[in-house]
Image 1: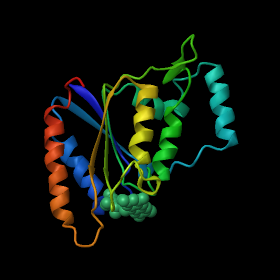
Image 2 (image 1 turned 120 degrees about the vertical axis):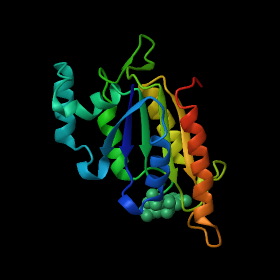
Image 3 (image 1 turned 90 degrees about the vertical axis):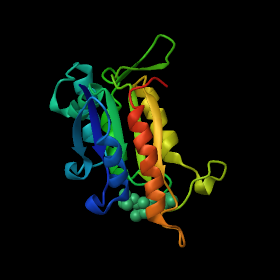
Image 4 (image 1 turned 90 degrees about the horizontal axis):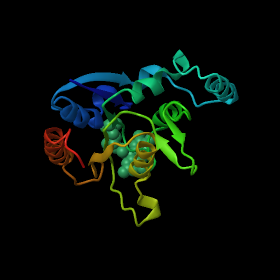
Length: 201
Ligand SMILES: Cc1cc2nc3c(=O)[nH]c(=O)nc-3n(C[C@H](O)[C@H](O)[C@H](O)COP(=O)(O)O)c2cc1C
């Protein structure tokens, strides 16, 4: 069995269409032991000066097994990551950003090689970002750009060697659109993604 970390950043809980789409994927991943991390319950705050000082001191001491780094270790030791969150303000909700701050730890989840290039030290071989959007994205238009996929792809490549995919339904809040039909189309994509989940590239 492979360990899949399902990072649930769906703030609206049972109302969340992103959660519905993500669950459709997660439930069908073959050979998977699913660990759920419910981000809303963690109430993560942004790192402040005290947190950074503590992180620096513990990192310098190599104390990476302490609870301070629990989220980073959990991410590091998973075989796959499914991160689900709604598309907010062209990117991820700040709650997810607070989570990502806990993952990027030099010396634990990545290091720099002798050419000062970052090398990921985390195990995941798959990273799927699941989202739903009220409108649409167009990356050639700054006011409509998808900063979430680009950002999460970069975080994925910083920390891992994983294949990255975005699974999205969009246009759900546009008047006249059939949100249910759009979600069903995305669910069909989730079904296909689940079947090929462990395939290379
Ligand atoms: C605070 C907030 C910001 C949002 N920003 C965007 C946005 O930038 N672009 C967009 O297309 N939709 C945006 N939306 C709409 C949501 O992406 C859309 O309703 C989504 O389906 C919500 O997902 P959920 O049902 O999982 O909560 C925003 C919604 C909220 C509440």
